[in-house]
Image 1 (cartoon, rainbow, N blue to C red):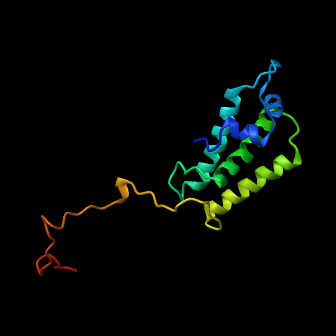
Image 2: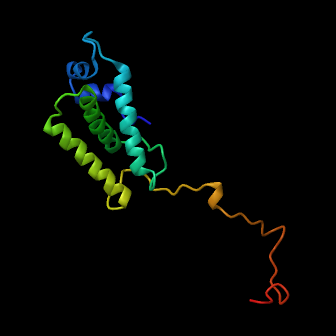
Image 3: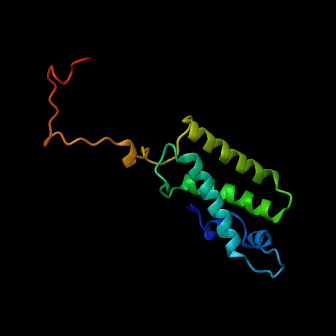
Length: 142
């Protein structure tokens, strides 16, 4: 899931810079598909780190939005195969370091913690209709 939008990228970068990073054919136009792809990849990376501790997809928040933008901007530079500015690399490295800490339990996101339960790991027992009765005949041999 994308945790940021093209408008968020426009606010973080200039529109001109966003066009430069997505316009591979020199048309001078923004390639929205490349923006969407970078945001989706960034969202998937965030989900991969957060999945063990939080329900996925995460709720929208400023922290998650910021992480998504940092990773997406790095992806846009990498996809364009241009020299990635040190500040962009550092932003992405910092974002990934935080996500690794989140995955290991050393840090938290501004999300409600939740355990994901599936039908496979839940044992259901109807105690009202068939209460378990233990007597000497059922526990023989133990």
